[in-house]
Amino acid sequence: MYNSVNENSSFEDNIPELDMAQLQKLLRQQAQRRPLFENVTIMGCGYVGSALAYYWQERGHFVTGTTTSWERVATLSELVSQVVLLKGDDASALESLVQGQDTIVVSVAPTSSAAADEDGYSNTYLATAKNLVKALEQAPRVKQIIYLSSCSVYGDRQGNWVDENSTIVPQDHRSQVLYEAEQTLMQANQENRKVCILRLGGIYGPGRELIRMYGGLAGMIMPGTGDRVINWTHRDDIVKAIEFARLNELEGIYNLVDDSQLTVREQVERVCYKYGLPPVYWDVSQPGRRGNSACISNQKLKAAGYELVHPQLQV
Image (cartoon, rainbow, N blue to C red):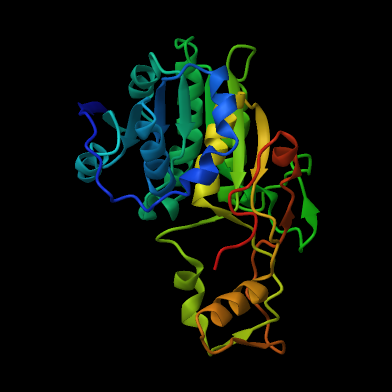
């Protein structure tokens, strides 16, 4: 299905404030490499996509934002130039969407019901990727695709370091789908059109602070040692890195995480200390929660010239 709502943006302060000074720091000179205003599309205007839409709209781009829900159309109409009601498994809708676009950001995510269903998960990511690649064959103007993926594709590395050259061995259906979607989109990379994959850590920021995630553990006794390493990516860094990728026409795969590489135990301790909460105790006699544990290297993105807005975990 393909439905659009055209509306000039009248901004409201309903997007949490971005650290605009930091976001601008490295981008002013680079902006001369690209046209001042572009047609940009954000496929999936959720937590990250909405912040990116706000950032780009304020800078004069013609921003098209997509959603799969009619209920979101009115809200998005205040953030973007055009709202498109679209599902990624609708090939004809994607063909219409990409026409006349300069940059496309893919920031899709399944609904809660689709996330639990293997077919729904595949339709959200893999079908979207396949249909987008096909649609791009008839859209020569598009010069940049930026896809938000996940560091979860690395799986459990038992706390060891990994980078973009590490072998990927998906350990579950979700990781397999995400990796296949990456590989599918990379097929669209060519001399006049760059494809950039940003692998994100856990996403946090305004409205998704760590106190909301860890505060409920205060004073509790948790099983295990809490030594699992979880990598995080602040929302502001995602917005800035997308703009950095666009201005520099980055291609290939880049990890986007902060420098922290803290264990769950260390993260919880910081949250409890900052907010004056009772500490969390760990019972090493009980098996801890299983999950991915890896130290994700961000050196490739830094070598390209990117500087993190939040290099350390914000608690």
